[in-house]
Length: 305
Ligand code: PAF
Image 1: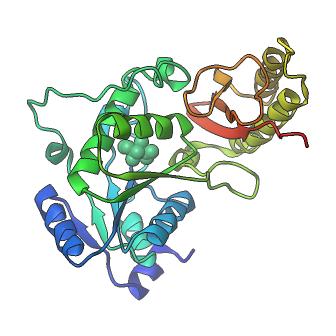
Image 2: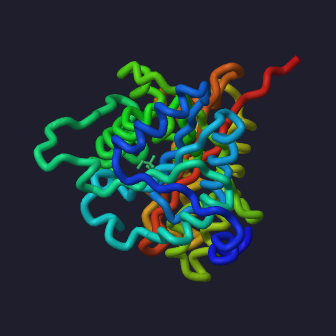
């Protein structure tokens, strides 16, 4: 990828809207010409992972809108809202380079009325995994995503599989609220080491980065141990998860918030190896210094011929 300043010089600038009425006007005009419209919601600090979401959006639509909004309501108390990386100029250069049609950059005051009294809460799917560790996070996330989807009126919206729980929460919300948009999950973009790309990776120092690069390997070792066990082995899953957590501690991780095997769609915890036809997912959240890392992989039993 070329540097933002070079890209800005060689690509026409991306159009910016901040006001929802302007955005709707643009979207309605495109639609009047028969265009299919995609939205890629982001919190900015764009990296190659975001660019892969944009490429997927581009393949599925005629016009691509990228929203950039660091949503204060999805940061739990004490989280990194104030220091979350922000790079408006760099982001706009990357969007221009990718040929994005519109950058939607609302201000907090445009997104939330001061007297707002409505929050979107998605039950069940938010109870486990990140839910207990990030109080209020999923309500804030679901509320802003509902507002982004309704505000833009896109036909399709693309979200990364890196936050698997978020993706399932959004799918459930869109179904339950009858929001007329297709939700597309995009495979996690990874560095050659296997580290999932994340805006928060900039927080890692050299020692933490090397431990972070081992995280995906621990997921794969744990999944292999689970899949090697007999389907009725009640201790195999718990044992593999315990060994995986211990491995993370050995690598220098602080709090391992969870390393859990769950049903891929309902996120219900599984204590037996997955059976063919019922996809499972192995998810982890763990802290390295002040950085919280998440990752996940599919765990699927093969049908034997
Ligand atoms: O995944 C993110 O970047 C955010 O949670 C999202 C979906 C843009 C909502 O603020």
